Amino acid sequence: MRKFLVVLDDSRECLNAMRFAAMRASKSSGAVAILSVIPPEEFNHWIGVGDIMREEARERIHAHFEVFAKWMRDKQGVDPELVIREGDPVAEILAQVREDPEIGILVLGAAADKKGPGPLVTHMTRSAGSLPVPITIVPGDLSKERLEAIT
Image 1 (cartoon, helix red, strand yellow):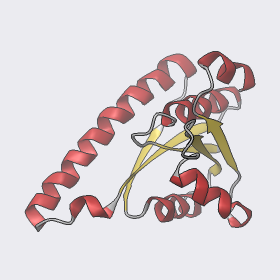
Image 2 (cartoon, one colour):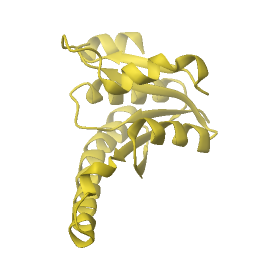
Image 3 (tube, rainbow, N blue to C red):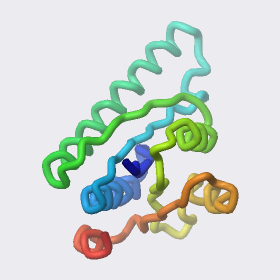
């Protein structure tokens, strides 16, 4: 089964990437893996404080995941899996793609503001020629109706 790997973060464009991945998986009998990466700089505190912050980050991720997962199950008939990794986001995305042979497409959301598409999209497109899977970049300002039409 082909999986669409989509990154869960706090960006607005993440929503359209989630929608696109779920719609494409539903229409192609695929699956969705949702990856959330906890950056290491969040825990540069004393060990006890870092552990508490790490657990709080995981709880936030699970809460966000459940919102997306419920929509995917209810509206698209897709039951996503959650993967949480810690480290540099780009390195962890690449590691997940390499470790899971079922991942067939990486789905990223692009920011619609004038500052550019965002750091993940910028980095991944620079190295797109050497990635083990294709990338789908979903514009952050596409309407739900337009997403439905193109998926």
